[in-house]
Length: 394
View 1 (cartoon, one colour):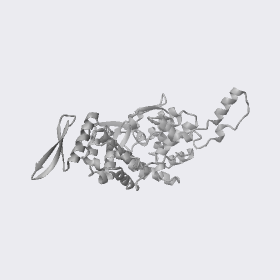
View 2 (cartoon, rainbow, N blue to C red):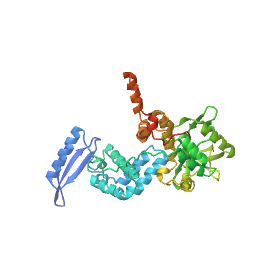
View 3 (cartoon, rainbow, N blue to C red):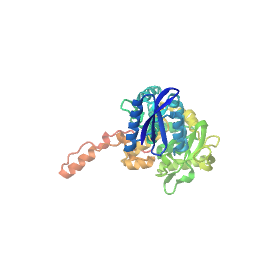
View 4 (cartoon, rainbow, N blue to C red):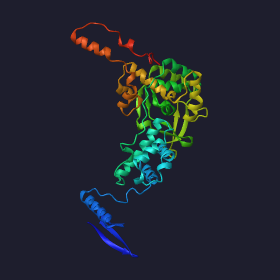
């Protein structure tokens, strides 16, 4: 199965270990000392018997080419693939790209992580996750025995989850009023239906059933690099049907009478995709799909400044989704229903994000036990103790 033979070339003695790998290929490796050749032969023979054989040359491929080959094999949608490629190109390949996979040690990873400290915590965490997944793939491909990113000595980037602080009803109404007439409906749809920004930009009147009071969320407008826009399914490829509140219905109907819908043509899924034409509720002044970069910079942040709201990332359009979720929870809606309305794939994520906004169950607990034990003592109503951040209908 494995052997060692003595070789002499040009008067120099070497020792050649020979073996056949699991695929039946003849393999050799040369050593200057017999003891090293014997040790290697014994290790290879034992690994072959145990089924633990790994190609001694495995892991010699550089991280960069392997990472790009890994990315090309993924089934990400086009925008996700573009984002991962950008993160690797900007923040991983400059340091790790030319190193052989087996050369990357836990200490290498720790030093690389430290070099990312100038980036936002959440962004660092995502970059690290991408690189760690690539090394996991190398382990699965039997190029490495361990993932250096998962060594106990590596301190992984962590992003502390900040508690969501929803806007008040007055804040929502003030920002909506500060938006130009053409774009006020964006705030109404986001706060009244809990839509993501891209879903607002991709909503068509044909998705709205005014008679049954329902809205189907079946597309979004996504933005690629160089401001290339496409139509795509909602995040997670999850379509959903939402109840249409009367307040949102009436305002949307009034808006559509004042602003005739415009047909917009964009590629589907990726910039080179088949073109689709959709009549959109809200469009730009040029009758095009709204570009989120322009909208956020020149429309949304301007409205925030006019109303005294900090134009930070936390107060982006997503703040209106938080308002929607907090209003539903304050009204006693279940986490499962809120999760479905928001289009989350996991109700657990919804619970982790918004659990602190749920009304206290203390009063219900007291009443349940008191009803069983026959006690009639009255405690202050739970609603008087609850935070009023989302009180009132939109």
